[in-house]
Amino acid sequence: ARLIARWQLLGFIHGVMNTDNTLLSGETIDYGPCAFMNEYDPNTVYSSIDRWGRYAYSNQSSIIGWNLWRFAGALMSMAGADSDMASELEMIMKELGNRFQRAYNEGLAKKLGFDELRREDDKLVDNLFDLMEQGKVDFTLAFRRLAELANPAPVPEGREVGAFFTFPPSFDNWLERWRERLDEQNRSVSEIAIYMGEANPLVIPRNCQVNEALEQAEEQGDYEKFHELFEAVTSPFDWPEGYEEFLRPPTSERRVKVTFCGT
Image (cartoon, rainbow, N blue to C red):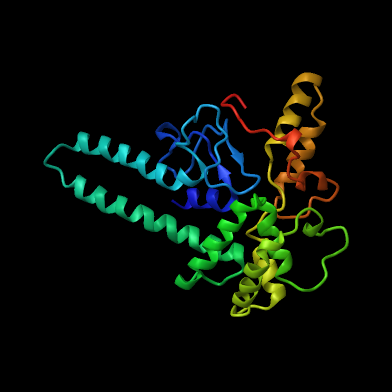
């Protein structure tokens, strides 16, 4: 539940989150067709084999439940009809959704600069994601830009997220309500900005960049692009000094919409 929550908070899509990729350790394997979203769309699918959106971004929290129910069923069949295991497993599975929601809410609060999410924040959060979807807003840069806007102090020259992304006018009203909510926190604006910076990465391995690094390595035997991208994403929350190109969302001609297990 915590792992899936982290994926959702970073806009990450596993691609083939089926039963054989679900480990009891709370980890996962087979990252072939995985990808990070560019613009926010809850129905985003990248995997070439996922034709119906079974493993779409918005489905990941429910698909892990389906996978674990299959495991629970296997355990129950082994235990036999007289076992108390069925009722025990049912209690555990009922808690799964709650565990996910707690982990997700905790992470989302930090991404937004709040000490915690309150019930009255639901509308503010829903409005944000509606606006992001309608405006085709870049998921990663939008949240990092919020971290920048949280602190009115000037950003060091040459390190402005605003040079790569600014919110469209449709966000003006939402940003005003968000700032009012920030004023209710028990932190200074500089503390809030640091707090948010720890939850909102600057750099993600975007499909277009991964694809270019792979092509350059495979076709030319040149691993320079791979090493540059690796250097940038190794410290995703820090400014990628010298690798600012990796901050940019893809242009239409560089966009990669499909990923494969072989990747």
